[in-house]
Amino acid sequence: MVFHGPECNNKLFILLFHPDLLYSSIMAIYFFSDVHLGAADKAGEEIKMKKLYKLLEKIESDGRMVFILGDLFDFWFEYKHAVPKDHLKIIFRLAALVERGIPVHYISGNHDFWLGEFLSREAGITIHRDYFEINEQNKRIFMIHGDGLSPSDWKYRILRPVLRNRVCIWLYQRIPPDWGIPLAKYVSSTSRGHTSGRTLQFLKDYENYARLKLKDGFDAVIIGHVHQPADIAMDGGRYLNTGDFIEHYSYVKLDHGQLTLEYIED
Image 1 (cartoon, helix red, strand yellow):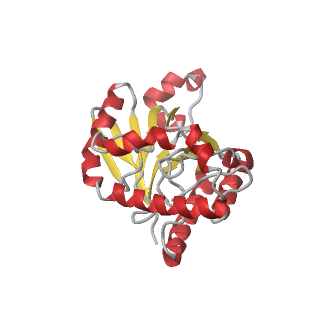
Image 2: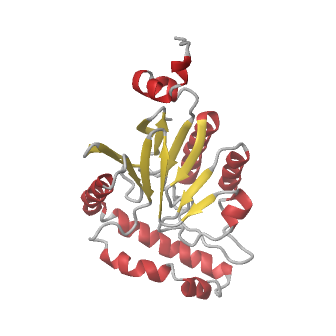
Image 3: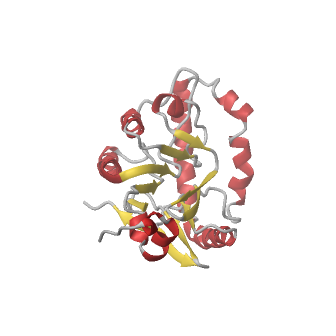
């Protein structure tokens, strides 16, 4: 349908009577998390990469922006002159998105909070510590990885500031990479097991956290970390969990003002 006249230039008129026109030229925004590259055996990593490449192809076709809500890697640590070499292919694919004009934002998680300058300097990825919020397509959205949100995770909440302390990071960088990286991978695997074993305790806490944020005026809260996809309407807003790329291969998409939880199919 085509409209003529000065009223068509009035955004209020369009918003009230034809909101579809308001979003007609807007491309999608994607959110995903918890890929944990490097955590599985060879066969598992091949499946994971195949699914992840499918998601990146979707982003290339209609994406305007992408948010990674932490734990893309099962472990990431940067030395001054060395980074883990296992995941360079995916980093190059993300850099290609940036070069195509699709901004990539990365919110740090509990497996990659030691992010340094490499991803931002070499791949053009924008790094956000802890959380981030946007106002897009008439939606105010709050995003966070989610580690340490649950009061029941009190041991990690005590340990978290120690792990992120600059002095501790500097000290760990004194360990040679050939020793430091395998050691950190081992510790990372034990951390993943700790979280998966307490998922049921976290789910209700995450819903309660989302309710508090919705009361602060957000339209949606998107969290990762627990590897359990969720799309729950509450208090006039939405709580969504991105799930993971280990078992569910799930992600969240904002398109034409609508948030949906979607899955990569075979």
